[in-house]
Image (cartoon, rainbow, N blue to C red; front, top):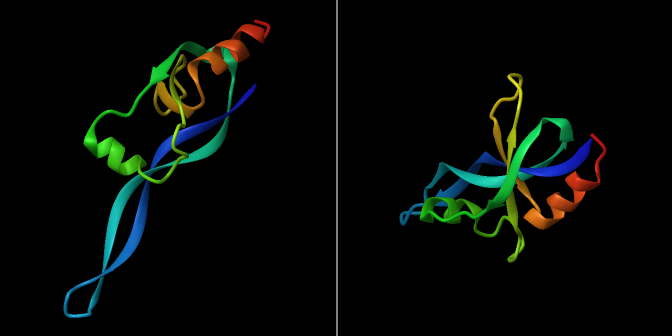
Length: 103
């Protein structure tokens, strides 16, 4: 098993203030990470991933260190919620990890 940090969308509740001093609650979607274990036998492919759209970059702002690299894992199997998972870490790091795992 490989321990990875999966990137996922999270709803965050923020309280904002109107010009008249009253407060209101606003919900926004941001990216966050959570630890997960991946069976390397189910990894079909891995490739570098970059967040490029302004919406993605807005959700990412301030959530991860400045030069964090991301990779996209494509998983095999019908039991996964999604076959594509974005994880933190460089493509070369995961290449080394997956090449060293026995099949």
